Length: 500
Figure 1 (cartoon, one colour):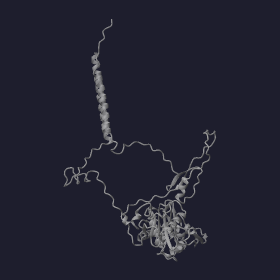
Figure 2 (cartoon, rainbow, N blue to C red; figure 1 turned 60 degrees about the horizontal axis):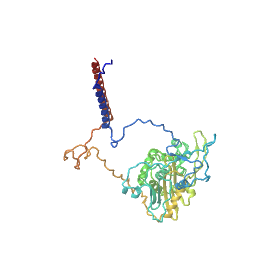
Figure 3 (cartoon, rainbow, N blue to C red; figure 1 turned 120 degrees about the vertical axis):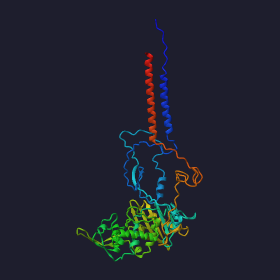
Figure 4 (cartoon, helix red, strand yellow; figure 1 turned 90 degrees about the vertical axis):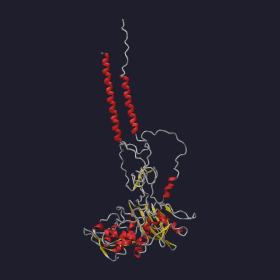
């Protein structure tokens, strides 16, 4: 006989434990929601990011990497329009009939991919304050960036060139016919030697003889070949500096003028005197040293003032000159030799009368040029170009000569002693961040939390950090574990008693 089945009630502890666990889970969800950062409340929480290894670029800092399609041959850059035309040209069509897609047989080479080349990139101007337009040297329009020209519709725009900055001006009147970012701060390279000559030519006797030092012989960059301990006339050193852009000749001239530091100080004083306030000389040779800088406006201004020196004007138009030889440290005697003028504009542009080219890695190509045509003399200064061709200079000169009487000047080259340094534009005050008054406190004359404007000051909310959120979650989770354990123990005890 089967004994009757005794009905057993489910102990109340089981639903109680489930309820406790549900409460703990709900608490965790609510806590996480409460402490979560809203999407519009600031930056997201930091995450651990594994940085991918950076591949070393084969290009130098003054270059950019460019992909060249197969079959394309790079040529020296002259005008940006040349590249525009090449990019817009339709691709060469090999066959117009469709061909079925067939797999390449084993061993067939794939067509070569586009090759990567390093090409010189235009330099980025130095950062400088925004100026009050009415205090900008040469006129308020010159504070602008980009191409500046005031022309009627019948006058074509200036030619498109690679220059980051340029100025086209009348050398005699100083009127600026066109410009591009004329006051941008850029590295001048060897065009700075124009300021070196403007500073030192009036101070040094051309017949003075200088004994070259070791620093001159060890000069970096372009050199004429000065030998330490040998004697050189100042006039020959100026020839080498302006015609051949010899850095060793610069340092020998600096020694004759009182030393390197003295020459740098004299050049900075001269720049301020003529109104070239964008210019800072660090190395009188023009090498990329420190924050050395100038602008296209300053180079045009310096070139114009240097052209007023008969000795300077005569030197820069020489095609070649004889430079003295000497004896080296081993006793070998070197005979005198010819130095030539590296200014390509003199050889190619009719009427060219100067002035000075320059190039360094970080400055790229810079230039000051001048030419006379029909009784008018123009000066062109160019900075930050990726081409060393004389043709862009010629194009700017051609435009200037053709349109000088048909455009309105956008500014002018000032006279020495006329212009002071420009004034920085006022900056907007910083907006208050901790109250309407900007101080976050209530002072005399305020009512409670009202600021000076009568607007209630915002109430700062307590900031919750990630550490606070973490500690709260840990406490709540621990409490849940304790409650769950207690309920489980109580259920076990009651069950044993019921069995007994």
